[in-house]
Each structure stands twice: as structure tokens, then as C-alpha cells.
Length: 166
Image (cartoon, rainbow, N blue to C red):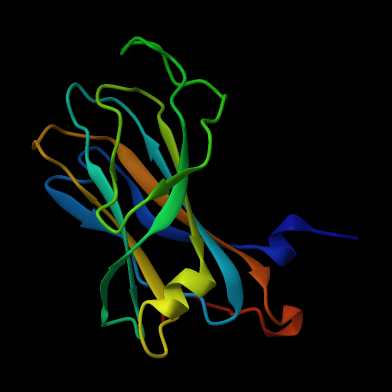
């Protein structure tokens, strides 16, 4: 039987807090050594003008994850007004450069799905297999949010890491 939680590893990147991004917030560095994919899920709550820029960094260790890389993303921010919570209709998968992309301002319940491929991480430098996700606000408007990281497509199913935030 295929059990989702045995094939995927969920890691808390940024816990849900009232001003999650303040001016900037970066997830724990995620070790992708035994996984082909890392998906960051950014889930936002109430805001008035916050529209942070999302970037992804790669590195070869948990203390040297600083090289900005390209990635792909999609959103689930289908509602057009600021007071209605976000919908469940995803956007098209979009390529982002290493400069990242700007989140949609004033959306309650916005979901941003950041797709990172291990081949892109590995191509960024020698022995690179670690990633992190950063959101940098252009305003200091309080933004309730959290970021989850989901590691998937284990390279060696028997070698799934007990922890990915060494």
C-alpha cells in the first residue's frame, strides 16, 4: 500500500505567526540529499499591503545555502477581492529566475507552491544538495503566514532521512 507520509517528508520551514516575514524570513535549510524534489508551500493569512518577494537559495551545507537559483511556482490566489479567502484553482506552472517573484498583495488565504528540482540545485555549485526559501517584504506590513517544505521522490526509498534540517 502506498502511504503518502512514507513517500514524502514534511518539514516546518517557518511556523505560523502574526508577522511571519517582518522584513524577511528564511526557512530552515533543507537537505535534499536523498530526494529529487522539494516543494515549499507558503500559506498566507490577513494582510493589507504585504507583497513579499520569494527566492530560493542552494548550497552544499546547512550553513552555506546562499546561491540564488531558478525555480518554478504556481499560486492558488484565485479570488479577486482582498476580503474573500483564496480559492482552490491553481495557476499555471511558471518559471522564476533567481531573482524570484512577487507575491500577490492583500490576499487572505493565498497559497504559493514553490517547486525545486534537485538537478537545478546540483547545477548551482559543487556538491550542492541543500535549499532554503526566503520571503522578503517590500513593506513592514504584518503578514500572518507559514512555510512548509515537502520532500518527495526519494532517491533511495530505504534511505529516507529521519531529519532534513541537520
